Image (tube, rainbow, N blue to C red):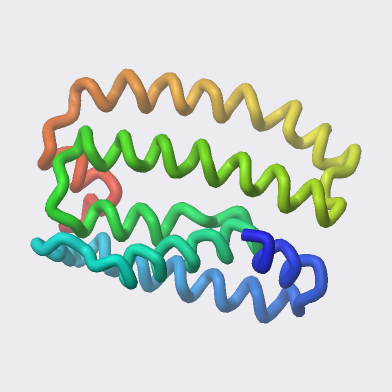
Length: 148
């Protein structure tokens, strides 16, 4: 994450936008196509996913797609996937906060935007928590990719 934040602070924003967009679209394609890996992931694969997500989180606050694709493509049940994603996003949020603070990205404009967006985010989290109780394993995997 710190490397991604450093690239955000000093990199070419147009190239970053295109690169991130293409990577997110590729990961979305994997989910839509229903790609699954039935075996347990190896340590190097897990590290690669973590490093990619950390870099993307630092450079664009889009750390989720690699991690979601990783967990959704694996052999785990919906409650296991959900629990791991909750822990991951909690830890990634703390890392983002520190990295962005370090690079001076917090401004009054950001504070005003947070004032508007945090309540919407909280409502979405509440609704998602309620909806999860109603979803079966099959529904849980299809919601991100309804085109199957």
